[in-house]
Length: 219
Ligand SMILES: [Ca+2]
Ligand SMILES: [Ca+2]
Ligand SMILES: [Ca+2]
Image 1: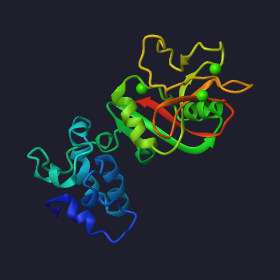
Image 2: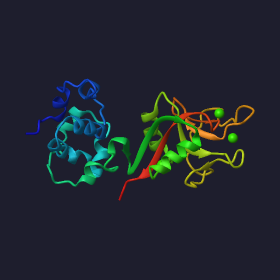
Image 3: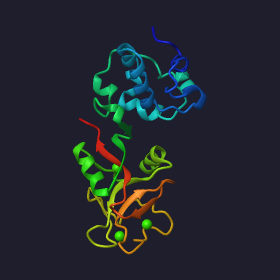
Image 4: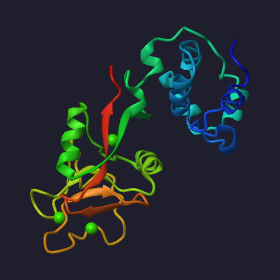
């Protein structure tokens, strides 16, 4: 019933919106799942659940489909996992990306920083707090070419940068672009974003930009 290996089956899909997993060889498992769920019946979603079990996501993430299908642990154990394993970030998982025990939402409506902050709160999350290089690399891989607000600002006291979750700015990870933050212009710049290349820049808070929300894995 379930094709082995999995990816050639996907590649035979006629829908052009499907990722070219064989050609690119780098499709992420979570993304793959949502596509499959969209195009196939529920039985195949269950078949993929083993791939999406949280403990399996890290080792499989970013690996090529063909290498996955040769991995001994890549065996199907159908219908044995609960819905929370299929959708690690909640039932609306197509909107949320999983990374390292956290869930991320990439808002592609361009809004001012304070609006972005509210949008995240409405989704029971906060603007992203980038704590280390792996998280930076993940965010960067998802936002490349565009600018996204992050949960860092010096709106209250100029030059006193604060993370939205009170992570200590002075001692924590930073990835400012060279020459930033520069509080540029007459009105200054008090809100931080990942630039199109991924490094951080401060910008006027009322500039419209995409944004990244973050929340813990739902319990
Ligand atoms: Ca974080
Ligand atoms: Ca500033
Ligand atoms: Ca700046």
